[in-house]
Image (cartoon, rainbow, N blue to C red; front, top):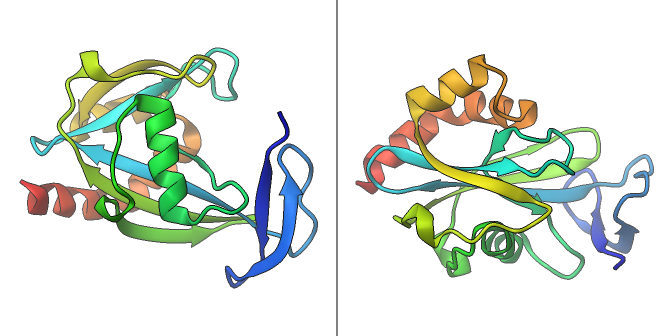
Length: 171
């Protein structure tokens, strides 16, 4: 099935055009990607492992993905989290903690407090094949061992202090 994404300009304004996922972005076109750090309120962050057929196969990451055409950032993060883990959350429950931009993508980073037993997590075949709650020190060790997706490792390093503060605030 073909998937389309809205096209944004460099200042995050919608252009009214759409982009076919998997095709190259033109100069000046931007998509949007959302990511969420899920906390259990006891010092752990939920990580999922990328399925063998995905890029960065077998590495750990937080949930997230591309915003589809017609969605806003919060709708997309709620959808992506549900698709990848089975965790349902209202859009308003996600707290925006950071935003960024690279060559052709705008990013929104969220956090969400949810204490969900691992046996209740529903993994999406073809996307994820493992799940765990990890402490901050375990995440740092996974990064050192190269077991966290490179992009997510960089994101964690940039946001670690803020995430620690949020985790403390959420207890």
